[in-house]
Length: 98
Image (cartoon, rainbow, N blue to C red; front, side, top):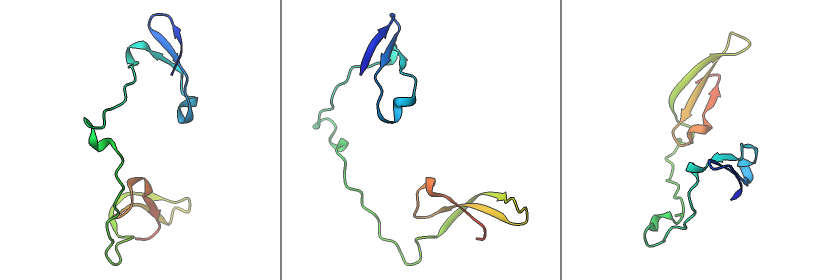
């Protein structure tokens, strides 16, 4: 929501949630009027329930790729950043042994 105008080229926004720590001043050319979407024009915009595919036996922790290798403070042991088959990218883990 626009809080106030700062001259002809900038506006101050009222930010909430995660954006509260961001700079509230924005260029006016980036501001667009809000319009709700028509459900007939955009039918897939409704959230569909996610279906979790069934896992095969022993597939829950199957390593797909080793992404990175690093030495620990001990300098004798190494850790490997691995990506799992069934987990999201942000859930990659460092393992000491593969």
